[in-house]
Image (cartoon, rainbow, N blue to C red):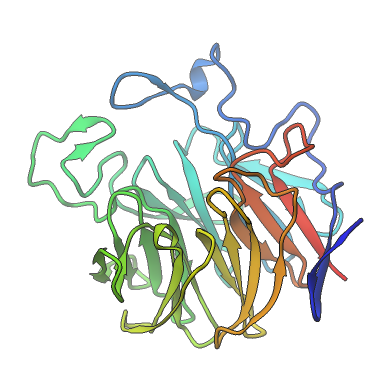
Length: 329
């Protein structure tokens, strides 16, 4: 197997991971045209069926949570063996997008089409819901016009990602309909928001994902501006890393490294690895990443430093698998 990356950070693809239960699929969309359980209507009354593995996250026990658009939205595997552990979330999500696991192994998710951020136990029990189901911060939603045009109870409009800081504050990348980042206190009460549409510092084109480093600095993947912007815990601008290839997700480890999943647009998808100071120390560029407009959409690491990536499109040569494991060598 070819080695990818360079320097002290080199990897091999483990194409036997994971062991998907017989008869199951990952990221193949809802079950099919004749299965009413997984049919959803868009604003034009057409059947909506998403597809792809949207994101991945690892818990403290080295279990990998695969958040995908299929009959079983949250599927959990053992990191080492790839063996199936459990699944949950059936009938709950309309369009799974982002997943994050906090130090207590609570599982946070974003549902882009339902305009929701939710906190669950590792078994799938819902603990907190941020936002109002199916209603966005705009009066126009996928389900039509809200009867009260002034209704703004939900801060979200197609939220993409969520992360939790060491103090328990919740940061939401509210990226497709809004161009904002929202900060909530540990009780789920909104503290403040920042960001507008634009290309200047603190402005965004698409707030796609968020993660937080060892210094509680907030990394925002400003995907359509091809950059990552970095803020302090209070939303003050610090720095930006530019000229990236459509950064879709960030993962900050506890060794002061930041892993950026670059979707690539129409070329050069991969994973770039930086120090927290912005020095590029390695990059995974693998022909298995799908193009065009594919590439890694989500990323996480296990305790051994192995990398897991999620893709919305099938990787070349694979019939259905859209989650990859890169073993550190």
